[in-house]
Image (cartoon, rainbow, N blue to C red):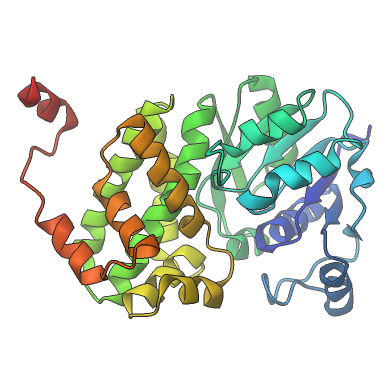
Amino acid sequence: MTSNRVFIAGAGGFGCSLAVLADRYGCQVTLWSKFQEEIDAIRRLGENKRLLPGVPIPPTVNLTTDLSEAAQVALVILAVPSVAVRDVAKAMSPSIRPGSLLVNVGKGLEPGTLKRLSQVIREELPNCRVAVLSGPSHAEEVARGVPTTVAVASEDRASAQRVQDILSCDTFRIYVNDDVVGTELGGALKNIIAVAAGICDGMELGDNAKAALMTRGIVEMSRLGVALGGRSETFGGLTGIGDLIVTCMSMHSRNRRAGILIGQGISPKVAVEKVGTVEGYVTTQSAYRLARQMQVEMPILEQLYAVLYEEKDVLLALRTLMGRPVRHESEDALLALEK
């Protein structure tokens, strides 16, 4: 096995950005897509014109539709949407050697099962080492060498450190985190709040409302994350508040862009169709079900779910949130009062 060979499954924006980054810093990169037309277009145009325009894909990056090329590499990166993780991992299983290291960079929950994506990967590739990488990392900036800092987590710290060793460089700084649950849920749940933040922008509600939404949003994310086994401090780090800030504030964010359209009066389904893959739209439904199962109070999530899936008017959802009974801001103080 060659120590610097990297296989990236998924030629979307982030997959391409990691291919450019890894190639720039000396890795031998293979970039895979399920779709021959996508590979052909990248070869012809020298870039992913649709998802990462203006960023050249170096000719030294090997382009393929053959998953068997994932064998004999130092690191396999899964960079596909949450709905595709299980199918890609299953299709990859004949080619992956036991003990291989895989890192998932997708952010979401599996629809239906409500499982974290690392759980899905372990089910399909039980003999592999699995890590997750998350944090504020827009593909457009990673590919252009803009300074970016993220975290990698694994149940096996050595695996996380191996990912850190392979992918860290002077523009891409990676911290190791031992909280896999919190790291994954931070990346998944912030997309929900980003859709809501976009709705705020589309409604022109101003800075005060958006700041409050983001602040109370991280509280809700942490509340559900802790209930599912994560650590509260993780949500105050790169994969929580860090990723939340960048996703709620940037026009690179498809979640925010979809939210803006919804806030301007476009129906959620049409907004998602216009923007493309919007993980926050799918994750809202999964997180809503999880919160109900765990009996975790998440008012922002509840109102966003009603807007996205029950045709609730955004102004009525806003009034519902603002009209909730007053309470103490501190969770600990609130619990003490309720005893």
